[in-house]
Amino acid sequence: MRDVVITGVGAVTPLGVGARVLHERWTAGACAVRDGEAPCADFDVTDHMTSKEARRADRATQLAITAGDEALADAGWGDELPYDPELIGCVLGTGIGGIGTLENNHDLLRDTGPDSVSPLAVPLMMSNAGSAALSLRNGLRGPVFSVVSACAAGSHAIGTALRMIQHGEAEAVVTGGAEAPLTPLSRAAFARMNALSPTGVSRPFDARRDGFVMGEGAGVLVLGAGDAARARGARILGTMRGYGASGDAHHITAPHKEGRGGARAMSIALGDAGFTPNDIDYVNAHGTSTQLNDRAETLALKLALGERASQIPISSTKSAIGHLLGAAGAVEAIATLLALRDRIAPPTVGWEEAEEGMDLDYVPGTAQPLKLSNGRPPVAISNSFGFGGHNATLCLQAA
Amino acid sequence: MATTTTTTPQSIEDTVVESLVNFGAEADAITRDATLEDIDVDSLDLVELTQVVEETYDIDLEGSDFKTVKTVGDVVDLVVAKVG
Image 1 (cartoon, rainbow over the protein chains, first blue to last red):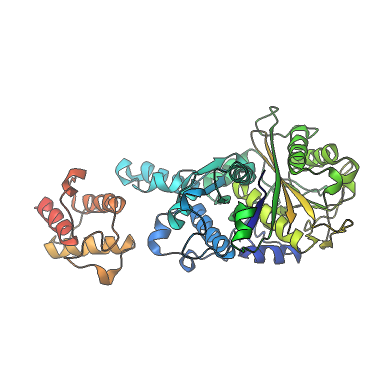
Image 2 (cartoon, rainbow over the protein chains, first blue to last red):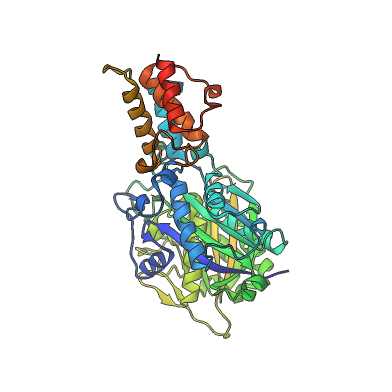
């Protein structure tokens, strides 16, 4: 099987525009949650595209385009693509797609009738708009589509990209996820199901956690066949070593109480990578700050990793940027990769109070250097679990 | 939003140009002789433009009306003819 490397990353997150900004600010313990939400306040679309491009894109797609531009530049892709365009794919994840566009057009339909609905409504709100936009903008002519699996979509997209390259369908895949869910309907809908934190605080794994904080953003990675990337002298950030996916078949929103589905995704990813639990140096948890997820994920980690679970740092990016839904897995894969590169575990920001049975090292307070023993580049897993019982785990190794 | 001011060929041209600029075309590049391709106006822009002029002038335009349209001037003339 061909190895698959990561040669570029890009992100727009509540911590700022840029993948390095995310990594550096999270590692320093910054938190971007304001008034119970985590918007990309530093993102000004006019800095990144023409007014025509911006009009033709829902905010989720605007975020994806911007992260994509950064990732391709980071990978050293200039005006000319480094591979046959027909062998470059694009797979992005999203939980909802262009819900802002949908809501605005529904307002027009209700208030002024069907003739007022924008002819751009469909191309803007369709859930595959992000992958379509990146394909169009960059001339990517390989397999192009989007993945929809709620809050696991970003990780499923990256896992799918990994398989496409391993199986020779593509030499490289531009992959990741994007979400712009800070809209009235989305807020109300998540609040009505008691998923959102009423206190507006994202504190994963803390005893006081009371729900997630919704955020927005996008993360894009350039994955490529290792041999082809090395042949063109690409700088390699790390290796996508494995991927595991599973379904709970338990409940439409609640995770399995013992975390069995999540544990299986982790075990499959480790097996796919050819690792055992003792090879894992860091876990980037799904860690949503909901009562159910964080307890079930802790049990899942113990099930999948055994004693190793209590020996390694486990932290949640959502403590710093909230929950980016379908973009979360992609942004967190980038955060994981850059943490591995710097041999550091960023903190679960704000963690203070332990809950009985939730006794892992959640990296409270400040970042910890990774303890490495065997001389090889460090390895991590990144978890994503979505409503519907969709579980996805990625296994990454630093270069 | 029917207009209450007098509709003239010039006011229609102004509306068309203003819409095309809103859609992202460069104002300096918009002349009567400029082709839609030159100013990067595509079929989706034309559908949006149709929506604007139908609402502004209370007219009906069909997709087939645009079959022979090539330049900004053609678009303006089409709307002027429909408004009558």
